[in-house]
Image 1 (tube, one colour):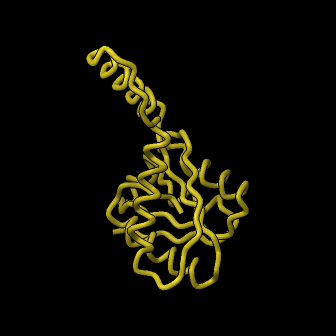
Image 2: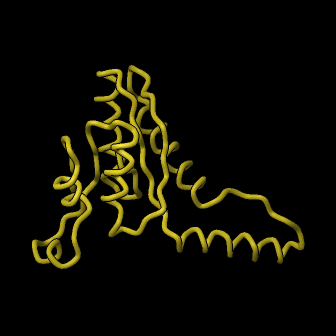
Length: 149
């Protein structure tokens, strides 16, 4: 499942968790960060270290993304009767490359189903800018559940 900061991801995460718990299947939660976010994180840490005249040791952007996914999963799965086993994987990718990364990670991890929160776009918007969910439906060799709204 692709975990992001949209409102619909919470509902989708809960539903994916219910299915995983009912079938005793582990989930792979994928988070995405960009090169820009990694650079911004490094710049911020360096500026804070310089201002404090000390060396700050803090989480990398990837660790922050992983923690976000873990916290979202813990919250979404809290009300389930069964335990949901999951792993968190973060990828460095731009939005335009996200579908390819999801397909790659799903293949490496042996995933047979992908869950993604989609965005509602006009047909023109999809044609001009592409759509991660649409690319997943076309490129993933298995079912893809897309929740919009």
